[in-house]
Length: 126
Image (cartoon, rainbow, N blue to C red; front, side):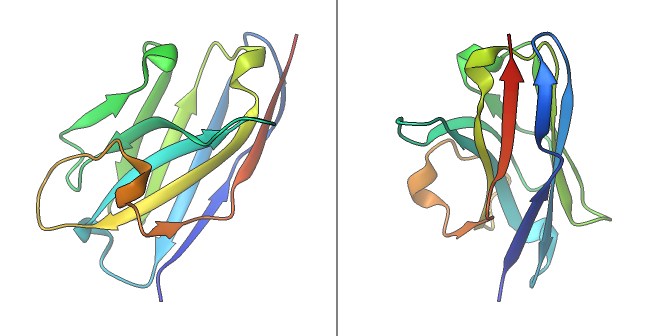
């Protein structure tokens, strides 16, 4: 049983920072590619960032490039999303997702991720 548990969400003013964490249990963490997605009220869930098994490959949606950084600590079975320069439009529930793979690549499509966390709320006030 694979479990993903996000933490680190909260309320922050525009321009502020938050760091999200997602701890994975149930299988060897280094066999997973990881992704972060978000869903704003009334909108579809969308891709934010992803990272390969080793961390050597990352990708970001254009709206967060230069502000968000994805990383992983394979010794702690945890993936992180450091969010700086937050904007009101970043307000959403943020989800982490995991995909077992034998390739060291990252995946941007949410359709390929079978494992999901419960989500953590990020609210950015103007």
